[in-house]
Image 1 (cartoon, helix red, strand yellow):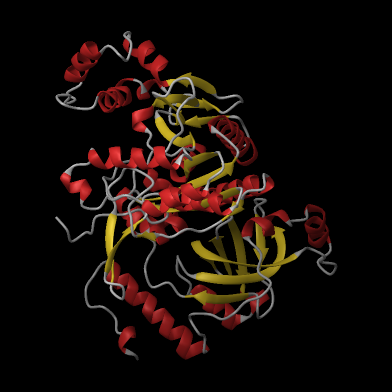
Image 2: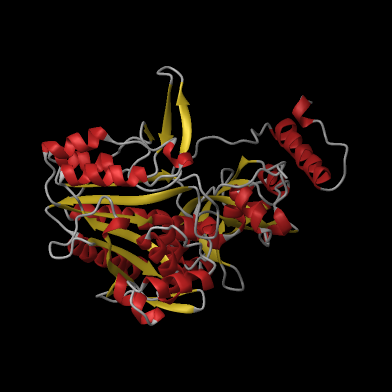
Length: 509
């Protein structure tokens, strides 16, 4: 007996683990079985195996067993149900695609393989090969056949939660996602759909001649968005670096270099709070199109999201919690200032009423920039009304240092934010490409920083120099992938669509 085979001395779950370790020893000592399996070729997903069932061949085989032409499949999965009925064992396997029943008979696989199958526990991963048939109750079943009809692929030492009824403790599910995925089929379905969504986005953009690129995750300047960064240190260069808060300024450099349409789907990091809609590490789609503008970005955005809803979810109208979201084209468009006046019943430039409303909302307004105050009040009063897909267009220019102004209204920026279900999902600009205006905006932005923010914020002079080389007029877009998956998969928490969300350590009070 090796050290790791020594049975635990405590009770409960460790007693169950001791029993599993004993079975592992028996499989090795009595049958010479490697409890951690080997390479297996020719496996197909359980859902595909179920789809290969041939009712006519099954009926013919039952009528004449000597002429058995039923499809033979080889499958693998984790055992979630296991029933020994004399010389017959029924087990339900689960993989990423489906659940499927298998049957192992002593006569079909021989006494040794049958004994090995009897030693199986819930959670073990096994391989079964045999013809597809049905039971007396009509359930599609793989009937293990031959000496190689059953094999252990991995012995599980940890008992599954609640006999595979699924984890109910949300915190535990997030911490032990590996158990959550195998125990809860809906979680697996969400994570697979997330992958399909990402593939569909890439396909949609490449069909429009966008090229996928990668830009630095560690950056010497925290630029591209107004957010608090994570700081790290590069030992060899002896410099502080920042995990990126946005890839924007690097992607625009690629337009300067001559790449006309670029996109990146990757992580951004913002050292801010956690909530059902915020995770400090999140996935963003960001793209830039030379000779586009924010109107081109609106068309691209609504077409993309509509197509995702219809192609992947089967309808332009999808549930989200207790509401239904209609992704039919076109999405609503509404101006920032018009929405404010419609909801609050006074124009945004009425500073006295704005200050009074801010006081009612407990928003500090003394000495605050007027547009910053307006935006804080806007977020509190307007956003709760933005349920159906709505492009909010034409923001105050002072809020948008990287955005081109309207030719006839320099106080208004050609920017939109897309809101769905009261969430900001996307943000887009007609990009500013005048180097002198950009430099002046950077200086104004830096002058307004607090002392604490100023410690990690500085002028990106190289980006200004890139604009001096010349960047074509362009449209730029950012889409929050996690929130998009929340909407398309009907989840209210961002943690439910991230495989490994950030969690507070269990030993930290």
